[in-house]
Image (cartoon, rainbow, N blue to C red; front, top):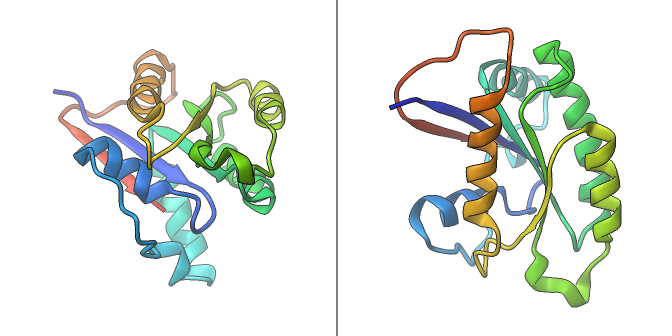
Length: 164
């Protein structure tokens, strides 16, 4: 079985862990439990992110569609991926999460689509809470990694997710 190294990036509170846990266990985490980026706001964190990116094979960039700032925050993250990987066409999906909160939306679907088109990557709107498009998201990133022609050798084994 092949190992897929997926890195999930986005601002704090956008649902990175919730999406991953929903996919892996089929459950939704109601309580927000800050993960690594909320504890490391230093150069140490920046170098850790570079290492995750260097070792990652596919990337899921997540923003909350009820938080415009989280949408702005992902743009430099994609730049960092391209810089570290030294390759424009890395397997990457842009994800607007929390589609279940439609009445609180701050980021239009058209904005997400336009950015994904600019980057040349797929775009999805998901909900970890209602499990909307969660399985499809992870299936698509695996599909992209399978067909990517990255300039590095791919490892063989099982599935790994790095949430940052």
